[in-house]
Length: 115
Image (cartoon, rainbow, N blue to C red; front, top):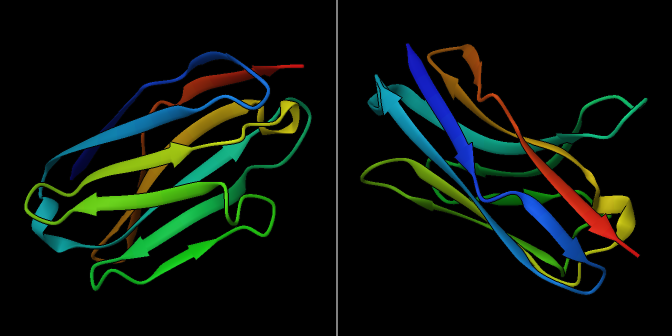
């Protein structure tokens, strides 16, 4: 079992920055990949960024060059630095982890970008 808790969401003006954090607890040593997903109202959940246990990162095209995902290996704490935010980045952001073939999710944190 893995428990994930996100923090750092909020309201920001377009062009601003936010940093999201995700604290992992439980059986964290079996985690092979961690990710940030987001879901805007009326839309499907979409991948924002992923990072493997080996540090390989992938990003959605819409956030490349603006967002940076990082992970602290010792604790599997996950972060997402979001710069140059746009109104279309408004969504609930979820932290996810793949652990021994199972997927775990946090409760989500709201990010709202005003124009």
